[in-house]
Length: 226
Ligand SMILES: C[S@@+](CC[C@H](N)C(=O)[O-])C[C@H]1O[C@@H](n2cnc3c(N)ncnc32)[C@H](O)[C@@H]1O
Image 1 (tube, rainbow, N blue to C red):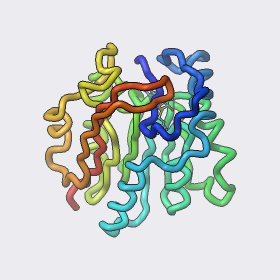
Image 2: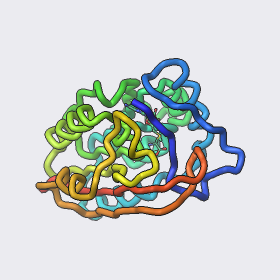
Image 3: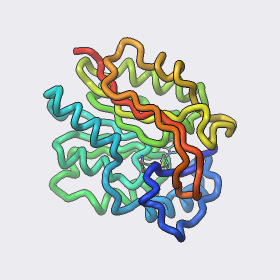
């Protein structure tokens, strides 16, 4: 897998952001790159998509259960979920993610946190109530993406939520091999049978960890009917 760490909020782009190299399997080189990325993102607010997801969860009256944060990065959303009373699986293939997260989690919340340093491709999900994943899923090869998506659909409990973004086929990195950048119709097809609460297509020039790029992605909040 070839992964380009990016963020959507141009305002978070420091002028001296280090350029990451390509990151693939979780080897030492990737670990170095992601550690730099987390230093860059640490201190940020939760992603707007995450906040919209939790608003939808609250509006639906869903009580905190088990949440899965796939590609948790610096752990900002994992931490917020713990603070909101969720049990959380924080999943990331980079060991640096756990190293950054653990010291941020107060002792009183640690018994509700499970850290899984594993590639999403190899994940075996338990039944869960909320899956959050931002800027990650499209960097899985199609076979791994489809496997994970089918498993998430299968293990999502009735009334539970998927809060994810998926890159579109006009994104800057869409031509990279072994990735899953999808046209709108394919993204819509993934949501069949779910109640779609947010489906925002975003296409714009914007900042990223690597400098200005063309963004094309879908922000999604969807719920399995209860
Ligand atoms: C661009 S960052 C996004 C992190 C966080 N979600 C955020 O919004 O800042 C992508 C994250 O996905 C992780 N990642 C990349 N490929 C992965 C895979 N196959 N399985 C699990 N995590 C992966 C990276 O280690 C990194 O932490």
